[in-house]
Length: 362
Image 1 (cartoon, rainbow, N blue to C red):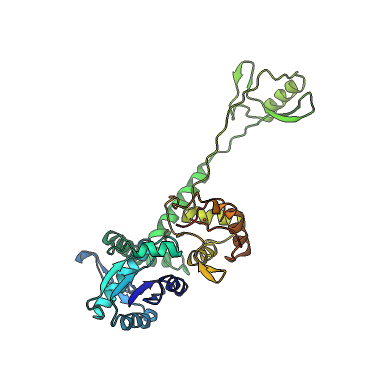
Image 2: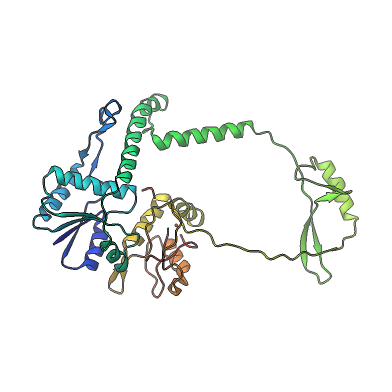
């Protein structure tokens, strides 16, 4: 028997169907350990030693995993491919070591960017060890969160009663907001006028022309600085005769937008549909974990928590035609309902993209 660990029960159910009876897929339900919310959890004077505490809600799930390992041949850690997923695998492994639940089992780490049978099967054929660099990056982030938060939060509570906390992200965001506000306060408004004429061709087709020069001089955006000057130009233009002296036709090239990253996904969903980031990510998570299509649970997008814009190998497959329309309908409905006959999309991290930019998972 092979024991596979993933984060969510929905993902566990889907992957179990793909792998068959020789595998048992269990869910950790996210992170299982964290730093206790008290002084001393991170000690900068002891090489940033960190004290981890098992979440009471996760204790029972960890016990179940430990029991399942009895008689198992392999422990396969298949959490998400990002930094947080790597950290979850590391935490689970460390807790199992502390419980002495591991005997002679082979320990493997596998990652996949899409929950499809092909992607999961390929991942199982290419296991690796836990990436220490990603785990170190996670611990650095948690240590910074803890140290900055415990230092700044008391100051925030004194200055803004009722405020919740300050931290690594909030502090930088506040600085950006304050700097921008200072720029706004320093801004000196300057009046300028633009002159646009609506003209007709001999065939009666209307088009607009903007005043860009007069008396042999080029007019810049801010050169007409008051209404009186603009009115003088208007009178001169109304009395003028117009002719098209030349037409320049140049080829224009438009490149497609890059696939979504986490931030551009959230921005586009907010701009087009008014979705809050949390709502967008809930929908994307369900699309990633998979939904039932024709009796089989299938992942519809690749991993959505990413800063990368690489396209999956099957991104140019003919089956992707019409995918934009399908994902747009699902997002508007606020749920990832499948659209029959359409392909699979990528709404392409921190933990924490709608249509127009996606590719199918491999």
